Length: 409
Length: 112
Image (cartoon, rainbow over all chains, first blue to last red; front, top):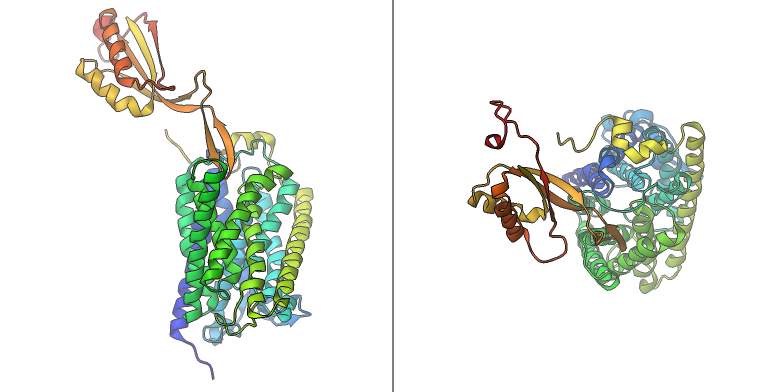
């Protein structure tokens, strides 16, 4: 008979709060500092409403759709709408047997919320607020929930043995591909320069993301265990290596180290270690952070200008690319010495894992991209995705919200 | 009477203000402005992309003074605001027709 473990429960309560801090205000501030001052409130607002709407639908039907009993490997079944009776009965989670079901549900809610908030970085400075409000519940339901079910809710990828410890595919590949699809429908901004109006916000935002990521990754151990400790160490190392690598790339490519580069490198390292955090050792974490930062650097500085898409704050370039790098890296570096629940990857003598990881990236990436195109197109036909040209030039804060971020008189 | 409009580096403001106070020129108005000169500004680099930032922050000092004190004030500003590098700024001098002190209604030089 498994009983509630108060140590595990305490750690998971804290981890849940940490991941909430990543979205509001972590992502909100990180993005808010990078855009024109006329759009600062709108940009921050996108993350806040994402968090609120996803939280609500998660407990109305989202948790069941993702983690309810499996239907054909594709979806969970809704058996307890509005989370009926689950908290009251005090059951322990079948996914994490030492903590309450409700705690596992609220922890998972924070992942759904941040995934949507991350997408907003690609569409800032030109998307209608009403279109974004419509996009959030539809996308969370039709894209996030199925994908999370496939990987984490006992769906077909989980049954195949695909590994994603904390969201390399479910969160990062997913949001990166969705961002790319939305950007293609929206088109480029009138002024698509990345000239941050207040890097101070982005510095605070990155600090909160980094701090919150310990809840994201070490929390994904689902208990106060040695595995959580291991995940915390590799998460931090990958972030640090990512940061130093991007600084080096800046120095080599443009001549001077930049703080935005340092922040971007840290996030690249964090995103890439996410799928691997509970499966790999310290050496692997150093390699993952290094490779991820270089790939992300070239994605934002060469790939984006070459293809000319306006992924405004590099959601695909950093999250998408590093999610792919990290997920494939799991196929190489995963080891049962760190996590006895798995067979491991290539270096542990299981090269087949690489194929499974590649398949997960391809299927999740393609599904997210195509579904987001369809959802975005439908919203464009009904509400319209993009603001009027005049509103875009004058700024969204005044035109969509009748507020301004800096009232200096 | 003359109006002196000096555009200087923002980081030189404190020094210039102190030097003006030392020669007895207390009244002045400051504006934070942005502008560019012949060289069209500088380059900044974000995420591997270079951007030309052609409007740089500057500080504008406005002083109205009598003909006799004009040269002294201008010399003081030039001396303290100068670094010798591009971007030190410019001074424009123009005639002022009338000065009126709102509190008393006084006119002319005694109202400066």
